Image (tube, rainbow, N blue to C red; front, side, top):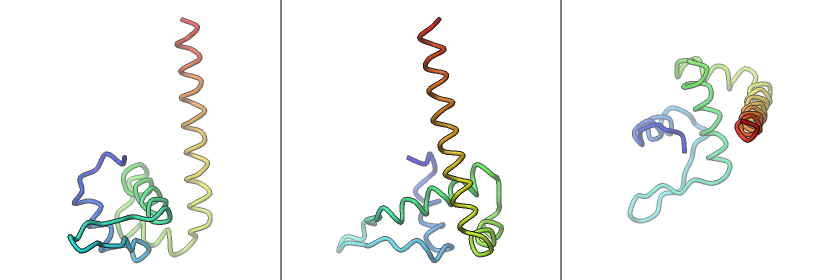
Length: 92
């Protein structure tokens, strides 16, 4: 889903307090929808925007709402871009 190693997600889980997946008896992590949204946001900040872990933490601490809004806008724009690419490909 995020194209990162599982170790990245475990590391982010340790570094970001907002990630609290439930662990079953076997130790498997069960992520809620909120956890997945937080993972998407962290992935966006660290992998797409190139922020350090410290920078991503600060960004979420300082203005989380603006960061979430920006991420949602980027997601919508990516969807629109893909739709336009699909239309172009159909026309060719």
